[in-house]
Image (cartoon, rainbow, N blue to C red; front, side, top):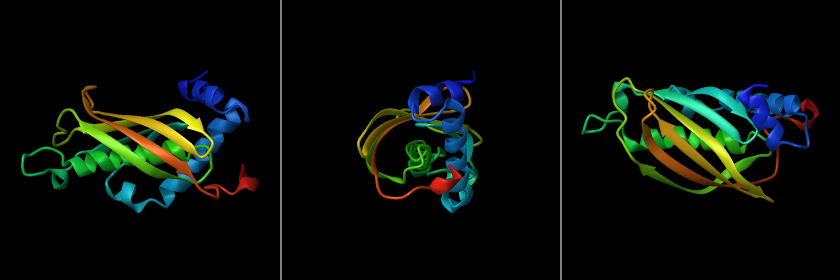
Length: 161
């Protein structure tokens, strides 16, 4: 069983692991198709499963600040996108209620930053997600914690589930 399928089995007992994984991937594809912000930043989905998303972004010259490192706003945007894809992966429309980020190391020109978001808790309409942003060498660039709130609606119409 793949890592994504194992996560799906653990996090989505109401569906089979394969169904939960397929739904999370369909939700991710639908969200990405309607996400010009992530697309414009060059952010790509690497993997998605229930409560989990891994997304990457190359650091371009137009993302550098006056110190020659990746502007924190771009690192935040990557982490926030991974958070959004992870918390919506259950196909219940979910928004951010709050977050924090700690910057630990600079991103550099031509780095490929990867944000891995993992659901830590989901109770009622609220969730907690941790996101680790690392560069291609595994160096941790930032740690982000997001709090989510479920609102009404679905990303993929329920009959398509």
